[in-house]
Image (cartoon, rainbow, N blue to C red; front, side, top):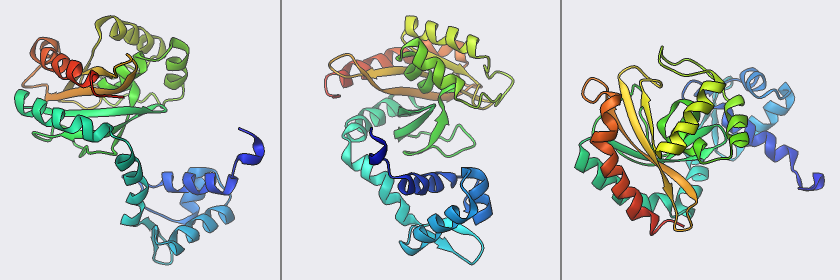
Length: 251
């Protein structure tokens, strides 16, 4: 892209929107400047513009995004056929195995949930379409990273904040690359309480008819009911069945 094609103000506005999240629902101008690295004047102009366009509320000190911001995410979900194609299969899979099932895509070093069928809440956070998790410690993230060339996967791992969520979380980049190699060989990934104590999950890649990985599919279960070592035998046949069926319709 030519330098003249890049709109810096637009990029700064997006950076300001991305600063808000579950941990930071209400932010001041000073907060935004610190999080984004923008100077205070630029942060103020971006926030006041969002307020003027009804994308943010402002009480004189704190800014908070309004429901109008959902238009931006809904544009993606309504424009791509992926969630609509996957959701019926997810619902059937979840009902069949009696556990929650999800689908996600890779966005940088994170996965973004595009569809979900929940049987019960197995994580402390409430996952739904649009939820994000670090790719390096999520089962769907690992199958999506494993689908990339080694150099690209390593770059994304190096760009991640490799935080030990639990005592089981693998944070060493070399160990993670070895895990990805195993995932490529096995064709699936199992997570044993690396995101959160008490949660295990298994994921497989979703390929389109041309063999390109376009998403990932997983089943999550309480570790007390289904230990990680038992997940392939318990759930892999059902995941493979859905994987094969969706390959015919995904583009």
